[in-house]
Length: 384
Image (tube, rainbow, N blue to C red; front, side, top):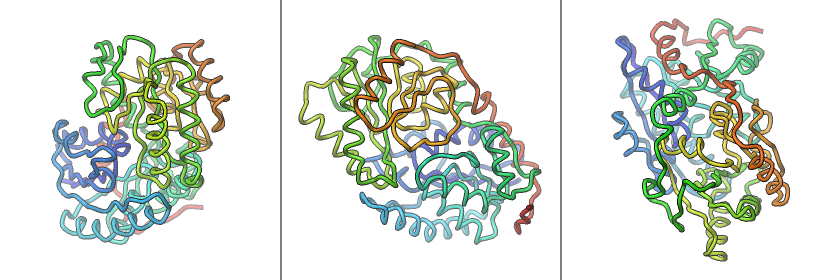
């Protein structure tokens, strides 16, 4: 029985690996271990403990590592504390593989800790090109990882060009698409009601009327501009006259500035029809993406899930630069007029045809199957 330890550092990690966790837990030859850390343990950013429990997952270990702050040194300190805590956790759990997701500093901590402890690392969503420091972290994790699960062919080819053996690269798709497919196949037609969405603040409105979905995070290389950037996005969205649902930003450098921008706008314009949530359960978020008139901001969900669902998306700024996208995305700079014009275009266009750029909805099962069989040495041999 192989022990597969999945590290979750925040809400985005969970949505990106949930289907694989379910498949690992159901696999007769695998034992799932769950380690929760980073912003995933902070109420401000949407504590994952309750969500994991409701989804039937047991948290084996928790690592309190998140250093809050609006500057890059908070991310550095978080990663440092994470390595300290995770080294003890991995020593206790003795996993055969540590599964890490994507490109965040918390994930880098788990990767380094596992690699130095001679534990094989399996990495999902590697090989992608984007803006900010995330790209550097993502490629660095690739060089530590023993098994790679890229979301598409282009990413797999990039991993191979980085010198990783082709036999250890499995193009499985993105597990987030599995969850989206499952939700759309079961409850996408269920009526939406703002009263379902617990923990939000702001005026209530009827979700059967057209609404915008705003999800914007700091760009770590532009963290000092976060407040102005989100203000431009909100101003453009409000100008449409539509109701707005907005999500709280993640814990990256610049989050305080971005949060301040949201609060100050709501204080200055209390009549603005903006309802803000710290976190939303994945099924509700997917249903909102299905029904929204347009998703606005810089979340990768507009590019990944949005392509599969057909959600009109206005991608703002540089955070997703280089990531493969579908016809549903319009890219604009951090300028209120440009954002507004792009939203108007998407409102006129409406829903797009689904494009399975990031998988067909079966990534989780493929990942579990590979992890049950893969034989790779702890000492990597890079091919060039």
